[in-house]
Image (cartoon, rainbow over all chains, first blue to last red):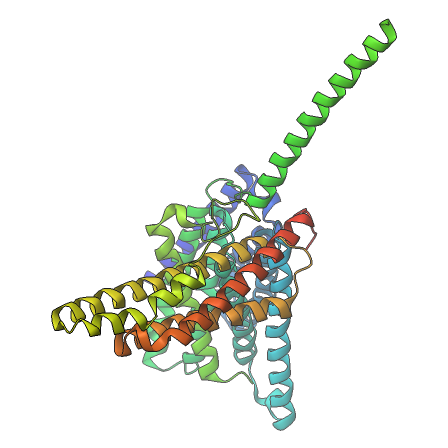
Length: 253
Length: 184
């Protein structure tokens, strides 16, 4: 019963998030994030209906949608990077290198592992693959957060919420996928409630931070540049006025 | 593939960093942008202690003079005061280094042609200086400032050099006019 309540509450909160996104025109600002939420919302409805109408297909549907969800999540990570660092080309370049390094490291490690143990591809489950992808995502988010903090990148409330919520979700997913392999274990029972419960909290974080659109604060340099431009423009206008005055005098004389 | 413990460690570190960040944000609403918020204009110089003052603080000459007076009370007082001044210098120097680094980061995050190798080198130098300050702090407490004159002067010269280098870098970065609009 509790599980059902959490399930329905999650769907309701996702719907609410989507409605707020439309109302506050947040869709246009964070398209990948809202596409992800739409996907998760549809996925929740699909899973719920399959679970009650054709439970024999539930497992297959669950893992297919889960895999697609992980891929959609990669787009969210990219959007955090894109929006957060749009005004900071220096940090963006650093992030590209750092993320490239994380992905290269993960791919190399995976390839070396598969080379050493070719049976891995045969015996690995969808859960193993999801854990692998979520782990790479968690390292990518960690690298981004460290870089954001190190360069003191100012965050708007919206982006902070997306990053905080998605980071927590990915971190908890990795822990869950690492521990919950045996469905008969006591830990599995605990996680069957803890996981949707924590996801519900993540949805709450998103709903709180994405209530309305709040832009990221302008970088200081841009403001300074704008000030400098205004100063130059005013000085030029003044000189033009003076030149026009001289010209008028010359014409009159 | 990626080891179980590696994955777990990554996830736990991520959660801890996010929690610490959320906690810090909640407690200091306006500190968000501002480890980069120095009020000085780019290119404006930041002054550290001159090498003369540093050599004076760490000089053994004053200590010898006080010892010549043969007053243990005065000697103790002098040692205590001089240690306090030296520790204060280390503290100020450490803050100065952080300030230079903050200003550098503020400039470099906007720079379109930032070089990773240069950034890494600057960060390593920053870490090295901070380490020097930490070691000096402990050694001053243990040995007293008089025996550390050489080390302190070396650190001072090093800081001056890096400070000048970073100021030039900053100026160059601002002269290149960051447009902040590179597409990602």
